[in-house]
Image (tube, rainbow, N blue to C red):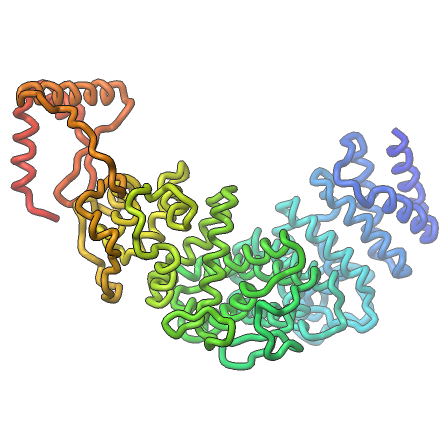
Length: 580
């Protein structure tokens, strides 16, 4: 109740209209509530009244300190999703945009808020242009206004619509172009990027506008380049300014502030490129994506301060790499082999090796594999599919020549063992992705795939692709020699293809049984399948001539259970069908 009385007292001070009294009251409120993120429901109406009064003050020509206090109050009040009505009108959002320095002029020369109290020096000569930066701009005011707009977008759909209608993305883009201008501090730069992230995450139209009208790929690529302090010693090769000739692994870690900004840029680029790897791009777009890809390679090989921040930084980098058009992934292999580089077939494999290590670390963590593992695993799979050198390097690391033929493929701590284990994961996306990666490393050769994983683990992928009867290579892979070890050649004839290992000889359970007894046992098994099927506990399947699985109809299964000759007739009929 004391807090409610304080709020009423603040409202009383604001209603006097006296600047000094209002400033003192707001500063007291802001200090007390600065770290408050939950609010009493009984104060809801009072908070709305306070919000309206604060907006009235923002429309007046007051001291910068009073405007700053008002904006700090808006930031605090905008944390409450139930009290946003005063701030989501077109006029309120326009006022906040003006203080944030991202208001856009209309073709007629007036700012789109159409309000009294417009900032001095508003430009009216250019159509749809953002307010020009001022060397004397109060960056604390700008930051508070940006934070308030971000809160509104995060909590309120009306605010999202109004922000898109006011073309705030244009105002932010104008300031993003000043990425090399030292005038702007970290806070302004960071919340410009956070606002851009929210707009592109929540509004499809803004996403398209940023890409097509505002050349967002190039804009944000330049922003990322400036944030990381890069220069280009050669085509599609990057280095950090001031550290010429220093290998990437010896560079000092990126400090907190540039890393935070870089991660926001990576998230925005992810939003606006999420569908590019599924469509063709022209030469101009491909050049932009390769430019970004070269910067991402630098991110991948760079370290950030703090283990958690470094892992997050690399996660965003990998996520974005997965969005690039597949032909543009060749930028990962462009840099020349240097002293200390990992070289394979004359190609620099530093980036690919880093991706492999990152993927294995996520595999070892075992947490939320769909979100954490699949981006890097998918990226490695597609890179291996289109780049011969990448595939052969990854195969040498993941599927080295097979020597141990007595241990099951899923048992052990080698990377192959870990990947085979996820081929039976409960999440089908994880299972399929792990199997696909190994299948590509085997050049989509069924017998080689079974050799490294065992038929039991491989059956899921083979059934999904109609390859249970085996199939030839797809023809997209180069020829190379089969690397069978002497150990494997000696044991090959004794390997159980289902488990993928040599097993001790087991006694024959049907030894001593007559053919009639064997047939009786087989019919018992069919009858059990029939009962389970009728109780909807299982769905019996059969392998078609085209290598795909087909359902066995309940009536056919019932006939099999009661008529042994029916199964043989079905087999005879299926043999006469043409193969697909």
